[in-house]
Image (cartoon, rainbow, N blue to C red; front, top):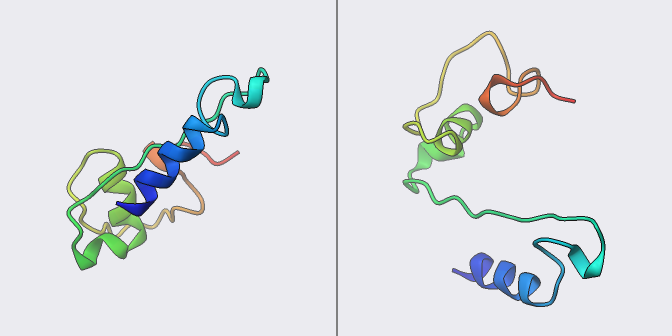
Length: 75
């Protein structure tokens, strides 16, 4: 996958991972593959897939803009 290759290149160049460019800052990117179905394009389905659940949309009065991943408040 192109994105995985580019993330690997960025890590090898020191732009990602522990101690980015020799600094105290660490930052990494994880590519999460899901079922690749159309429904995964819906916001709550994407959040469920990232949390390891089935990528089904959820009808909820709480929007992902109000509560983040794992129902954590946004900061």
